[in-house]
Image (cartoon, rainbow, N blue to C red):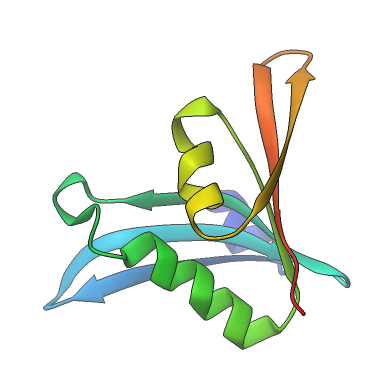
Length: 104
């Protein structure tokens, strides 16, 4: 969180309902894209569209391609929302996926 407070290119947002935080998203806005660094949804709010709504909000706000890097556990979330994925091997973290959503 400290890095998000120090770096003016990094943003952090939350999905809040009735004063409860159900989802968080950390991202960076670049010239050509928005890069999601993290997205997390409360276990009790999963399958309610919170994560997808946060992605949609980023699309509407910035009108840029969106990219994220993730693992096998979360790649399905991105595929379900229309992201294309590319698998690669990270030197330290093993198998990863680059997920890209192009804005038309």
